Image (cartoon, chains in turn orange, yellow):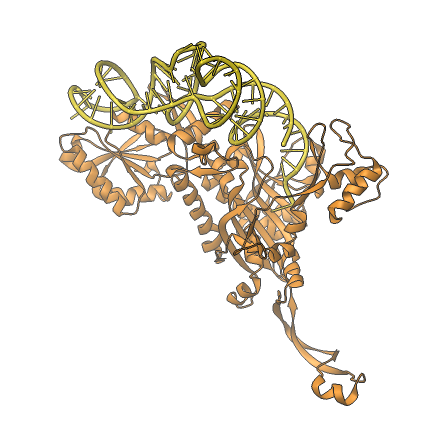
Amino acid sequence: MSERETDRLTELAKRRGFFTGTAAAYGGVAGFYTYGPQGAALKDNLEGAWRDRFVTREGHMEIDAPTVMPEAVFEASGHLETFNDMLVECAECGESHRADHLVEDHPDSDVEDAEALPNAEVADLIAEFGITCPACGAPLADEPVEDFNLMFATNIGPGDSSPGYLRPETAQGIFVEFPQFAEYARNQLPFGVAQIGRAYRNEISPRKGLLRLRELTQAELEHFVDPEDDEAPIDRVADVVLPLYSVPQQKADDGELQELTVREAVEEGVVESDWIAFYLGLSKRWYARAGVDMDRFRYRQHLPGELSHYASDCWDAESEIDGGWHELTGFAYRGSYDIDKHAEYSDEDYTVFKQYDEPITVERPTVDPDMSYLGPEFGEHTGFTIEESTESGEHVRPHIVEPSFGVDRLVYTVLAHAYSQDEVDGEERTYLSLPAAVAPTTVGVFPLMDRDGLNDRAYEVARTLRDAGLAVTYDDSGAIGRRYRRQDEVGTPFCVTVDYDTLEDDTVTVRERDSTAQKRVPVPELPDTIGALRDDDRSFEDL
RNA sequence: GCGCCGGUGGUCUAGUGGUAGGACAUGAGCUUCCCAAGCUCAUAGCCCGGGUUCAAUUCCCGGCCGGCGCACCA
């Protein structure tokens, strides 16, 4: 898609009600978009499709956690520390730099983790090394080092004694409640907990419409697995071909993708975790059905320096828009990092009890003194004993496999990949070739003429289709061709027209968006037929 | 956050130191028996604040928003 076409998409999105910048009446605010009726419906359908695929059909649990969490949660998760950038601003040119990076990169410096130091100390080091602004060369010695945290801060209740943050990812809402969710899973690994919800990141400079937002929607799945015993069910997706862009390929710098099946990727070790490989396969199929163009799609492995603080390996699903690649989903292998941290910072038990096949006998020191009795009697000389005991299992910390989908980016990709133009009867036509299952409206219903009872009959047909649970738009304004074009622009896959024959034989025409072909269908069959077309149970050609 | 460019009805755009014109879209009506036809009428606009000026949509400064480049993207 050319740059020009992206501009056209943005224009169409605003004009037709997919998305628009928020609060334009007050000058607008960067990084926030409001979905109009079409966009909200599309997004809702994509979320529904995600839920169907990654929750319902996998037997996982879906939960709904708050968007505001107390500070302690993010102390434990590491976001308070690592989601924080140390910035120093040059007084001369105004350029902002990562203060910790400047200190670490200085030739005289042996500091390796400046980010862990207090800001004042980093400022002192800048002065000590005589570090100058990389942009203009002015000394930075007297400039303060300030935190810029990408989390939105707030206060819980009155006053500032109880700080909280808007979550930067939905995941922590799952991790922090892990003990409870494990209980719901009857303490049996593996199990998955999913959540669709908003997350917030106070981006320095949000851009590119829906691709980089300050308030975004994530669909995240945290799959808790036993790293020793649980194997991914890759047989289910073994033959799915993955377009892989691994670290070695990225370093080779020729941009070549490696096309491997899921099974090959695992067996050849290109994708280290069989669980990650499984989700790459499952997701690829799902993306294709959701309307992502598989010719503009790849899985790219994170480079070592790119990995998040919690991840040991990560693959991103990326889509191509306007010649650039954009992340859609991160498939991260988080190890047991998150529940380790919450176990460490809280008093909760973040383990699952794993029963051995055979109980084992161990010797270990036990201490269970009754100090109220022993203390006064023996003073310091309270001892402990070694006892033999039988253990039937052990407490383990599961590893976490996390597919984390950016819903807004998916919406944008699907729209960009659906954007199409062709010519009908010598007239240029713009249409969105959205899959019927995710299109905001499934069927448009029109009277050929707004008279002679056609309108009343058409309205009845629309009513019938709505009663069947279909998303219907009724339109009786202007010429029929104009109404077709309107629906084309919002991606409505089918249009039903009530004409004079309808009054005679109770059939209507069904017109398909992409081909503009038409077929006659009896009205009584219409709800089932349209429903089957939407669900891909029937094809238009076979009508 | 920095630099460059931009901001005129819902959308696209013309133009001006004396408050604006078009196209498309939308609504009403006429016409119209399947793909943005035509006619009539109607609704609707100079991003915000400050400065210069008798007068600012226009010139200047700042802000906000957008595009591009840089930085950033846990």
